Amino acid sequence: MLPQIIFLIHLVLGYVACWLVFSVYLLPRLCAMKRMEAHRLIATFHSFRFFGLVFILPGVVGANLPVAFATFAAYGDFAAGVLALLALFSVRIRSLFWFFVIAFNVVGAADIFLDYVHAIRLGLPPLAGQLGAAYVIPILYVPMLMITHIAALYWLVRPQAGTVPVLLTDRSA
Image (cartoon, rainbow, N blue to C red; front, side, top):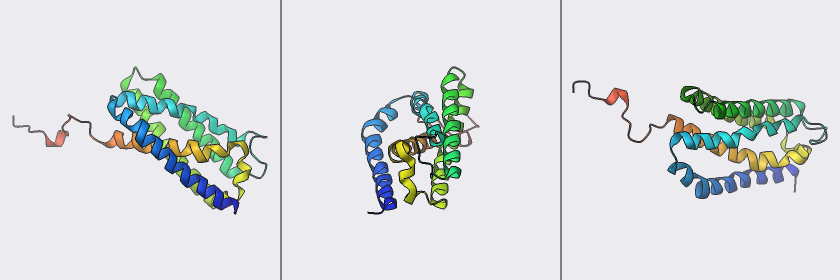
């Protein structure tokens, strides 16, 4: 079987498995939490994104891993991880916490999406073996990152239960 087919199968099944774990075990618990606590838990998970710097660590990935992909992916992950850490450090200052929650989710989701674009444009799937020990990142870690970004972004734009949008309130009362 061709390496790009194996990589695609791994990637798709990684998303399927991560979605099942998330929807069965994590989503019910996150939905039962207060919104801030759920976002704090997601930020804690994303605070480990500094691990993406492994893409530019010689000896961990193969020498033929496209440098343009590795550099962009490494620093995009690092930026999202630092923003998630800043959200955690600012939890007592709510407006700052929410700013960093929005920032790490937007930056992190954009990073993952752009990493996929770069991977396809640079022909990474046939070279997936060049990921070396970092192969597990796009197969297991990235799917859970993206799923939690989607959930977090959804919760950020969805109105909170028990609140009424300002435009719908009756001002004559």
